[in-house]
Image 1 (cartoon, rainbow, N blue to C red):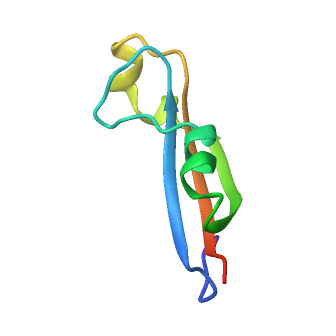
Image 2 (spheres, rainbow, N blue to C red; image 1 turned 90 degrees about the horizontal axis):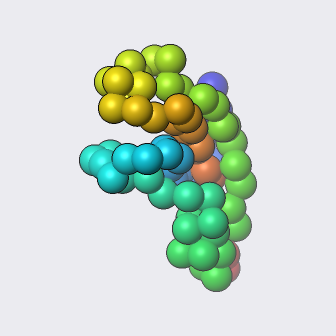
Amino acid sequence: MLLNEEMRNAEWSMRMEKDSGPPFAVSVNEVESLYREHAKIRLLAQRDVLAQNPRFRERGLSRLQENIFLLTLRN
């Protein structure tokens, strides 16, 4: 299990090519720029999920990357 009782907030993001959503893609850079002032950001998992989502492949995507972050608020 990736998450435990110490978790404060988790941010889920997907990186997609050539698609405008929904779901809407949020890049690692966007997560960092939005939260780095207020939280420590840790990447917990990163995986290619295109094979599990054939509708995105049918729409022309060649990559679908899922990222899970742990955000811990700074004091």
